[in-house]
Image 1 (tube, one colour):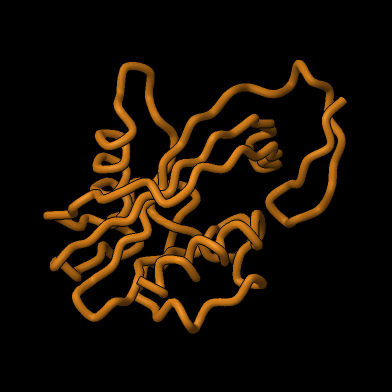
Image 2: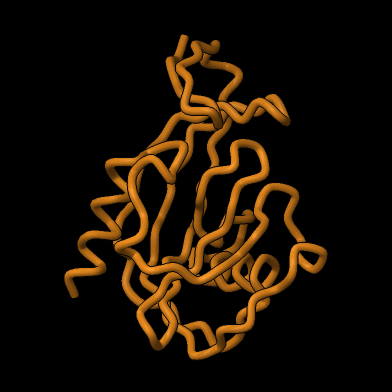
Amino acid sequence: MIKCKNQRNEWVTLPRNKFRFRPSVYGIIRNPEGKICVCRNMSDGKIWFPGGGINVGETRKDALLREIAEETGLAGVEIGECLSSVENFFFYEPTDEAMHAFLFFYDCQTSDQKLKNNDEVQDDEARDFRWVEISSLSKDDFSDMQEEIMLILSDLEAR
């Protein structure tokens, strides 16, 4: 049995054979004003970043560019260094999926600031993309991995 959190940050215990590996990439995308792009998760109303699963045969950077384009519509995104990698066990109740996830967070920049409207987004979970100041975010804005996310953002803001 594996103890993990669901999308509402509640602990659940699930059998090991329910889990699947899920490598994923996320962009902390900064615009020229230093704001970052975030979205709202439909399942819990919390904030997250553009990105998602890596397909078999796809590099991390190719997957991130694809996910950013699908979700935000941003063009000319430059992918910089990998800021952090986090291992996480997670249960997503809406689809009854348990994941042993490996999340890679990248520093990204773009001069393009026009984000897709909700009806243009090709994602069932991510909505309400917008630009925010890093300093306006707190750990309570995130449903999972709050300490890890705040450390990534703090390190990025200090640059």
